[in-house]
Length: 143
Image (cartoon, rainbow, N blue to C red; front, side, top):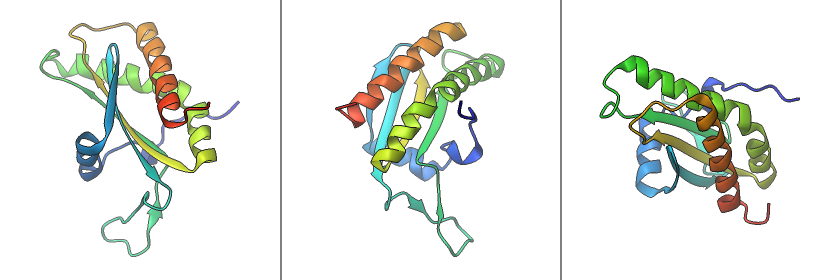
């Protein structure tokens, strides 16, 4: 059994990388999620951190989550949904991450919640399962 964590270096927080992901990346929909993703080779993925001379490699899989305040005015509701999405991702990412390491690919993925209602964790978990399988098929067709 592998350790199921979602560490800081696995989170997509760079404004520049997120902007590039939405501009150049591809997307697909698995209700209630809209999944944006962008693939890089290992060499491109070395990111220069400001103020640090040497280059620090990041995780080969980084993720982000967004829930619109358009449908959920209260931050409590947005945070609940983001926690559920991150938890479903955390529990299922290990096999996907191993495949990426074997193929030496780096992927940025961003999950946007697009429903107007709060959906229970089980439904989000099932949607995440389908989303990761779809992403695997798009990136590695023979798997």
